[in-house]
Image (cartoon, rainbow, N blue to C red; front, side):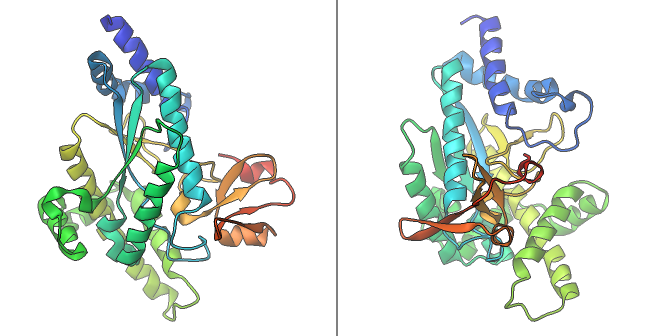
Length: 325
């Protein structure tokens, strides 16, 4: 394959991915879809895979575990929301095979074990969530191109307790918390900090919580730094473990950033994820992610599958403004 053909194919692959971009503030060329600057920030990595005739490898730190707040989710196991997200990712690899025969591999690097103690999810729930995630992946049509990787899959951590795994990750890769706080106060990663603080506050604001909102907010702010610190440590570990792979993110990213934000399922905003929500059948053959409380407030009916709660279904189609991506 000539150099020009390699570039043409690599750009075609990136443009397929960018159709589903989860963008930050849209300015300049990033107001376009697909954004040429975002494409060109990643196309060189794709070119290396294409020139070698290998599947393009993406890593996606995501699918940590369900929110502990049952006003958002149906329980601690994956459900229709995760299934839809996995089907989307598998469909994306199929689309890539249409323009590049070796296709793509998307390795989901589940980060739940990385910060489960900081987000209030028991480790046994993380274990159950990961087990069911693997079952959903195994049920995808082959070849799905989807894999699952967890902290305990590292050979050097085999046999260690979960707390010790997290300690070793932090010892080897974590940025000091005070340095992170200074960067956030200076405006770096402030949107991510605010978003995670909001998620942690909502996750802790359950009927069982008996403290004050102010105390819960302070606690959420403190834990948000830990979540960001560990997430960054996990990302640095993955960069060492999978050099050359393209990094996807479930968070909005600025134009041309090293990470590329991607939507997994339609959402009413830029932040909602399958593990902080439920899937809502909109009545028009499509789904959107919403919080469980919102689905119930709209009078949606609970749907079960395999004996477990799966998703909600509306009896009347969702209003277009609410269904917007």
